[in-house]
Length: 366
Image 1 (cartoon, one colour):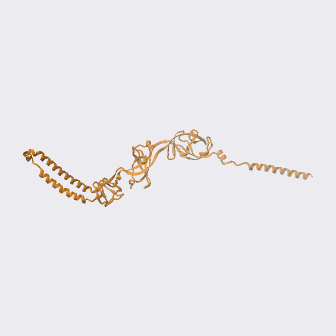
Image 2 (cartoon, helix red, strand yellow):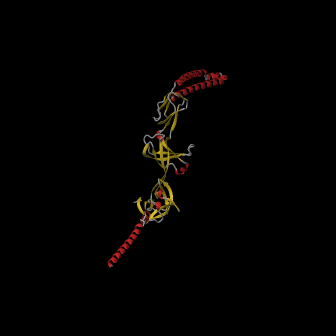
Image 3 (cartoon, helix red, strand yellow):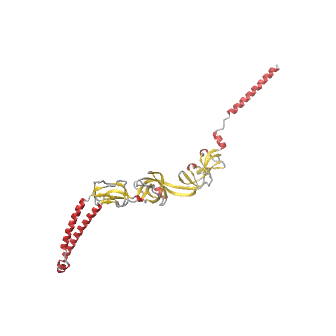
């Protein structure tokens, strides 16, 4: 009987132990695992920072335009006529004095021959009308009439001689030559065509006086001045940039675009440059050394205005700043930061003032 009691007692103790163990197990297994946020708070939120150091800071204006020639002329025929030959084509380079076109002089030469004959007749008439001084002395009463005949005949001779000179000049001008060395940019006539006096035959541009003409709005004018440095590039010469400087700024905007033309002088010219090439320009408006700047994404607007997160003793600190110019994705910090400060540039979205942080990457580390 005692043995049975002992058996039941042992069984009861084992059951109690099993019950307690099961309760403890359920409590342990039902406790929630710590979340990622909790772990990050405990260990520190991961952030990337940049060490602020004084550096060169530049601002610029971007503009587009084209290559133009400072000396460009519409070459025309002085006296007109039918074009016998027109050997030059668009893109041809010519030197000063080279023949651009030749006009037919057949009619001019006929007129020249007729004019010479007329001059001969006028000179003979003049010789016949001349009154000698002796005759004048003998016939003072006829003096006035003789002088008038003399002057009229002389005027007729001069008029005939002037007509010959004009025709001879027309024959000379029948060969149209280049007024300066350059490239043919446009043709406005063809061989065989009859052109009127003064009508442009072609456009010639001087390749030695090329500049880059770009357009900028009026609100950019206060930032511009002659002599500023610039960098230009051409689609025709990919992968290369060329130094330039501001030559002059237009005094008035274009009537069609309301934009101001700014001419840039090339300090280095690519081979094969021609008028009309598309150009991109960056005009340097400011270049300062010892400037503190941070990436634009590091700055946000807080309750006190522009703010950044700095890292101090493994904690994030809200730091108000005063901003300056912006350029190339960076913004100048005029006050609020000191050289060597660590500024958060990535991971600030979950930060609060005083939050523990864990720095993963430091840019500008010296």
